[in-house]
Length: 165
Image (spheres, rainbow, N blue to C red):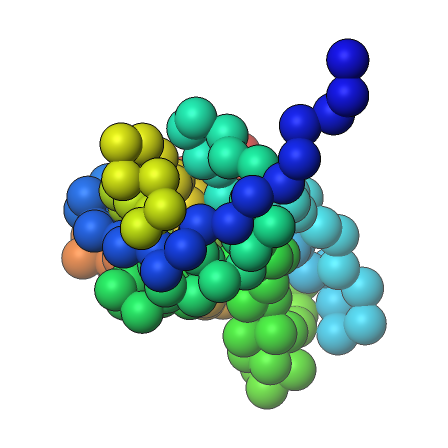
């Protein structure tokens, strides 16, 4: 039996099926011991993933993803989601004394698209793009009481890593 030959999705038509925003999650948390010493408590690997159902055998998937990006609020591409530069910049610009905690949080987002090809009008595909958004960075002083109106990520970092220390 020979392997199935790749085909193309001619003039892909993409319709957005909406998005599902998950609860924010702590991605990275660092505890400071002094100006030059910190310990990373969590550093979760995060990235964007793409899946199709049913799985197509197209030789022009990149063209289909560009068409999906044209109707999306974000670029549809499989890549690492690395906003840690924001945390590193915040850390470099602040005091790093003992008792401080740096954190980075983001929200998972799933975008769904319907894909139809001009040359396969009887077939419909579902494209699912999982990614992250709404990064939040901060530095907390675990010796101080957290304001009750603090953002979710600050509260989660404080409750999980300051109150347990």
